Image (cartoon, rainbow, N blue to C red; front, side, top):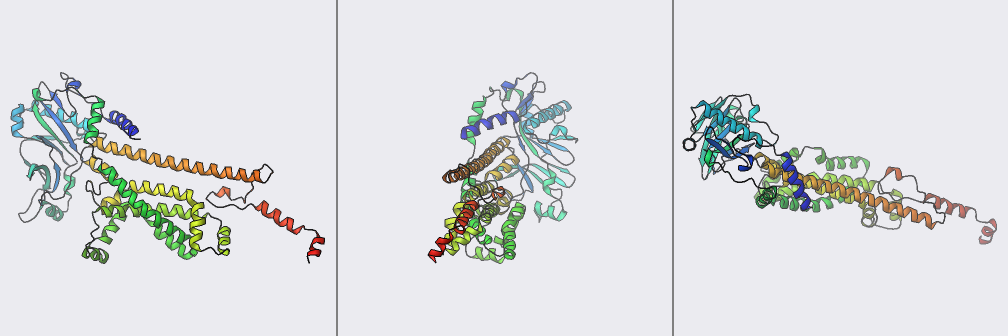
Amino acid sequence: MLALVLVVTCFISLACTPARTWADDVAASENREGSAVDAQAGFGLEGFTRYNAGAQRLVDDVDLGYRFPVADGSTVVIVNAPESIWVHVDEAAAETAGFRADDVEDVEALIALIKQLDESHAHGGALLADEQKPWTVTTQNEVLEGAYRYVFRAKVGEGVYTSVQPAYIPQDSTPSQEAAVSGFDLGDGALWVDNAALVAAGDVATVAAPTWQDELAAFFADLDMQPFWVSLKTSGMALAVTFVLGLLAAWRTAGTSSRLKGLLDSVFTIPMVLPPTVCGFLLLLLFGQSTAVGRWLIDHGIALVFTWPAAVISAIVVSFPLMYRTALGAFEALDEQMLDAARTLGWSERRIFTGIMLPLAWPSIAAGTVLAFARAMGEFGCTLFFAGNYAGVTQTIPIAIYFEWMSGNTDVALFWVVVVILFSFLVILFINLYTARTLRYRERGLRRAGRSRGDGAPMKVDGLEAHGGDAVRIDRDALAALLVDRDSAPVGNEGRSS
C-alpha cells in the first residue's frame, strides 16, 4: 500500500505542477524550484513561497492583527490587497542586488519575475497576473490603503511577520479590538501573501535540477507523519466506543414501541444530518464554560476543549449514526417469528441478542463498523471546532490538509489527499468484497439444503429474498408437507390409538 501511495503521489505531483518559465538566457535545468532571474536587469528572485491564508492568534502575547509569516531569508513581500498589489523590498537587499525602486525598467522586471513565480506556485489558485489592480513597489515598512495598515516586517520575538491592521490604532487598544469596533474583518485586507529573496543575477542558485527520485526522497525525509498517527489513534478509540454504543442503541431502539422508537431514532440519527461545524459548536458550548456541565468538569480538573479527548468525542459524535443506523436496519430485518420462538423456549433478551441477533446481523454490522471508522478518519469540521489544530495532538489528516494548503505547502496537502482517497477506496472495496462473499455463502447454503431434500432443486423460501437484509428464512414447503402428512394419517390408526 505504501509503495502505491508513493507512486501515485509522485505522478500526481508531477502532473499537477505547472510548467515553469524562465528567462531566455537561463536554462530551467540550471535553477532550483522557486527561483527565476532576469540577466538583463541584473537581479533575480529565489526561495519563492506563497501563503494562501494567515492567522489572527497572538504571538508571544502580542496582537499583530491578521498576520502572515515572513519566510527565512525573504527580502521581498508581495501583498494582494483589496484594491492594489503591494511589493515591499528590503533596502539593503535592493542595494546589494542592484535594484532601484524608482527605476521603471527595474520595477517592471521585478513584477514580471513575481508573476512568473506566483503562477508556478498557485497550484490551480488565483494568479497575480489575472488581478486587474495597480502594482506599487516600495521600500517603506508600513503603508496605508483604505481602512487597512500593512506592516511588512513586524518583528516579535524570533519571528518576522507581515501584518494587516486597522488604519488607525488608538494607544490603549489592540488591532483586533480596533477592527471589532470599526466593524470590518482584518482577514479581508490580504487575499494572499508571497515571499521571496531578491539577489543579484550572479547569486541565484544554479544547481542542477534534482531528479524526481531525489525530490521524492527529500519530500518523505521532511514529511511529518504525526497527522496519520493522530488520525489512526483517534479513529480507533472512537470506533471502540461507537461500536458498543451503536449496537446497544440499535438493540434497544428495535425493541421499543413505535411512538418512543421514532423519538429515539431521531435523537440518535440527527448528528448525521447536522453540519459538522454545528456539532462542534454544540460540543464547545456543552463542555466549555458556558454551561453548568462544562463548569463542573473544569472545576473538577477535567478540561476537554482543545484536547485529544475532544478529538475522540468529535469522531464519536459524527460516526455514531452510521454504526447505529446500519445495525438497526440489520436487526429490523430479522424474522420476528424466530425471535418469538426463542422467547417461548425461555431465552432471555440478552441471550437472544448475543446468540441470534448478532450472528445473523453480523455482515451488516461489519459494514457499518468499517463505514464508522472511515467517517471518523475523515472528520474535519467538528474536530477543528471542538479540538482545534495542535500538531501531534489534535491535528488529524483532514485538518493537516487544510492548514498545509493555507501555509503554501501544497505538495504535503496533496500527499494527504492521496492517502485519504486510497483509504476511502480500500474501505469501499472491503465492503463490496465482504458483501459478495456473504451472498455466495448464503447461495451455497440454499443449494446444500436443496440437495439434502433429494430433489436437486434449491430450497424454496418464503419470498423475502427480494427485500434483502439478514432475515432467517422459513422453509414453508417443508412445513406444509409435515402438516399434510399428519392430517392424512389412516383413520384406522387413529381409532386404534384412541
